Structures are given as structure tokens and as C-alpha cells.
Image (tube, rainbow, N blue to C red; front, side):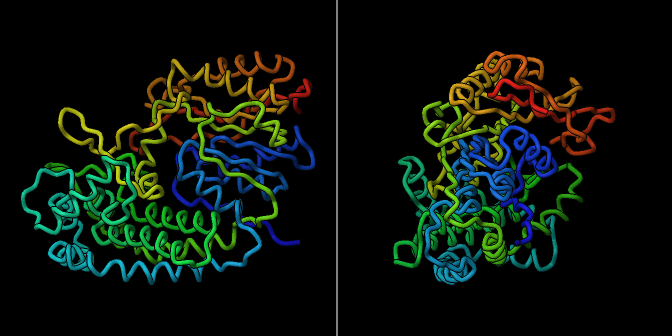
Length: 453
């Protein structure tokens, strides 16, 4: 028997359940011994889906974010088929093609790439910060760009307005100098372009291999990003008058991260963790509120495992750059009072009802009733906030969540497990609350009407 493979996080993700995995598997085992079909509608970084698949469950993973659905397609082997494809070999071909795509842009951006390269080599963080603030971007009111840059800025802006595919300039015209270094952004663009080029050139490609290459691309971006927590809510905040000692060190480390190498490393890791195509897992890009009981019945779902967001911190805010990379459609940037947002957020981001104090309870109610109507048990992760001053107040209190689930399943069918873990706060430790007590829970509803052990 092969040794278990530890789940792999393609990107840094808020609320990751790595520490909770054994408790989740234990709870599901008490409801559906010997495996079964599990729907996980908030798959996120996919660590739960990977663990459940390895434990013998058939997983139907879903997410409102296209990036997360792509990760699930990759790690669960969805669409893998019988064709044998070496992911590292395919990734090498993509990198070779990306290097060829890069040549014209190296010339176009040469006057900016040269000082950036020198600052990275000299480990001059303050210089990197200054260069990033001065770098021409399509959203900056600058008159210093040459004709070539103006042309590509205009082309990307048109693609954004028309919601049209455009890999060239996808990252480099919008997120360079802030989230990424210029060279890194150009390499991300060329990888994205090469993935599509090789697919159209007849190189072995199907839904699964494409998802693997896009997942590797997202991993490289997450490894390199210059932002708190390695998320994409906004880049590190730097301005005159602020002590930039930490940021100077951080930007040198982040700007030194090699995009192509990280892409290749991720392809090797995916080769190790991805499931075989014969296991019949699913990966769906859809919102949980779109799911019906009839579809769950068609899929044969026995248990629903849900880990919704519970704070006003919308998850789409933390992963919008990854969404842009995955979809290869430049973002039409949101403007507030005539200026783009500091996080460079796109217009029309998905807003989860689970992050709204008004909508969270009806959303939980709909989820629970859909699962119960489909004849599936339900396990819901919850992290409580016992302090009113943590900055992460929950959109729905635990007692309200429990009573809502009880209305769908009956009080005797629902139990609450407090886990011997603490919720990891989003805020930096220096901004933390010394007496915080944010325990994690599993709310378990047994469709059989028997109290789960």
C-alpha cells in the first residue's frame, strides 16, 4: 500500500484547514463509514478535498472563485483521462515557449528592467520600493511612457472594457511595481500566453493538464507576491515618513523569487499529489447558492462539508489577481472618487452572502435545507470570535448558525464539537488581542436523525 501524501496548498489561503483535517475526516467517518460522496462547496485551497479523496471519498469540489475550481480540477485529477502526461516535461516546454514570448517585452521595458535587476542584485530594497512607485502602469496618470508602452496600455484597456482574452500585458501593465516586480510580472504574462499557445499547437493537453499548468502559475504568483500574508488584498503599504526597514527586506526577498523556477517546482509537486482520473471526482466553478437538491441527488452526495467565510473580509478581495491570471482577461479596475483602489480591485467582484450580517443566516438556511432535501448529512466548520475588538467579527453567531441547521434537520440530529484548536487571526501579531479566545467548531447534522457521536 502506498504511503499517504500530505495535502499541498497551491497558494496561501485564508482560513486554511490544515490543522483541522483529522477532525473533519473523523466527523465525516461518523456519518458515512467506508467512504461515500462528499460535496465541498467552498473548496478554497483544496486541502480538505485532497484529504477526503485520499481517505476514500468521492469528492465534488466547488467554489465561486474560478482559481479554486481550477486547483480542484488539478489535484483531484478531473478530466485526467488515460493519457500519460509528464507534468514536469510539459511545464518545461511551457517555460521554453514563455522565454521566447518574453524577448519582445524585454526590449520594450528595457529602461525599467535594467535598474530593477541591479537593485535586486544589490539587495537594495529602498531602491526597489522607489522604482515600483515610479513604474509606468496603465492606471497611473503618467506622461513619461514611450509610444510602445502607450500602445500596449491602450490594448489592455480595450481588452478589459470588452472582457476579451489578452495574455500580453495581463499582469505587467497593472500589477507590476506593486504586487510584483516588473520582470516577475512579465514572466507571469508569458507563462499564461505559453499555456494557451501550446494548447492550440496540439501539445498534449486536456482539461486536467491545463488546470495543472494554471495551478502551477498561481503557485508562482503566490510565492512572489509582495503583500501581507502572501494574499492579494493589497500590496504592502509603503509611503514617505514610514519606517520601511521591514518592507525593504521583504521586497528584496519577494522580488528575488524566480517565477519560472517556482512554476516548474509546482508542476513536480502536482505530479505527486494529483489523483488518478478513474476516481470520478468533480470540480465545479459555481456559487453555493446556485446548487439544487436535485443535482446533489444526481451526484449521489451523502455528506456536505462546508467551510463558508464568516466575516466582512470578502474572499474575492484576497484572490482577485489570481482570478485575472486564471481567466486571462485584464481587469476593468474599480475607481473610487476618480482613482483606482489601492488593491487595484476589479469592478463587479463576487460578494458572498456568507460575509453579510443581513444575508449570512438566510444563506446558511438555504445550504442546510438543500443538503437535507437531498438526503445528505451536513458538517459545517465555524470559528467563533469571543472578542468584540479583533477586527474580524463574525457575520453570524454560532448559536444562530446551530439553530438554523436544527430547523432543517431537527434538534436531535445536530451536535456541536469544539475542537482543541484556536482560529489563526488575520491581523499581524502586533495588532493581536492578548486574551483572544477564538475556538473552532464543527456543527454536525446527521440526516439519519441520530445524534452524531
